[in-house]
Length: 486
Image (cartoon, rainbow, N blue to C red; front, side, top):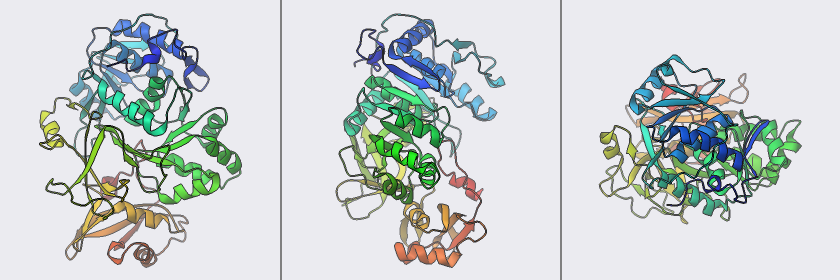
């Protein structure tokens, strides 16, 4: 396997003098990043796993890159993780040290670990041998929605395969400048948003914290790609109607690629952005355990409500509840669980052979837990999670996602989530959780039910509507549906 980050291994490479990363007023060229990470990698050589206090800073980038170059697995830590969850991750991953910025204040749970401060001005040289393709690169912990977080072991071949498949799908090159404000302890922000540009020899400008103004500024000053989550694109769509709407529209229209991920982007936000800018946001689909599975290609049709087609090297099928493949899936509307197979998959869950075995079928397909349908041309439409978004009501299998999009098409609805609740007659009844556009005058329950029935089908209308001030969301903007019922 060739180097995971080739632009950092050769000081004379064409990209050496070009900017690699920028955080606010601090930037590092590829040569400077190579030098700083090389100095730290030399100190890490031979170490076991290392934890990285993953703040949105250049220190985090240097720390992760150094660990990758040294062949030491890195465990990114969310600085907002609670004490109990952090203690679990540390006990499970058993890092030998924690890498952090010199100014970072670490919580008591990390006090017993040796600390290594990251110096982004350090200078070191050397070419480090590339570990084997199955060598663990990162251990990224899942969100823990169904129990304590599990550490997904991501080998070097999975990262390389996913990033190279996205290069093919998005025509991603070294001249691209990626703009984003995603956390650096998740796959989206760290692997796609940092390692992606570095593997191409391009650059990333991280906003530190998302703002509409920051996105517009960076896109208007050379940014070519924008990565975001639906919450960010919703705020951009809202800004298009404000006093700075013209500047925002110009910035988005000038980007080569607008990509949304980590959750479904509502169709009405797709349409608002397209109407104002003439550009379509494209979506992709991935998980911590699989990295990227599908994407709308740069030369493909941007189709709201879909996450595109399987990436190069990824096999995808839909499966029934008993695990058998769904017959005649394309264009029929049949719902099944997405199962994937390919070089993009993780090695397994750290210290959890039981969970690893349960996640795979006997013939090597990974059970994603996501439910979808396939368009006639193979575009994937995700309807929700098997555990929370597949509603069985009156003998029908119903995906929450299409009902949410129908609700969001109502002018009186700002945000919406749909879940199922036990019902003695229907098995499950459809419940809509709605944030009204005008809290003082929310649309009525019957009005919303009729609106959905008119757009979709009568059996898909919500039987109960509950009004909220806001939907509970996690760091990536995903609605935490279990919290709604809690």
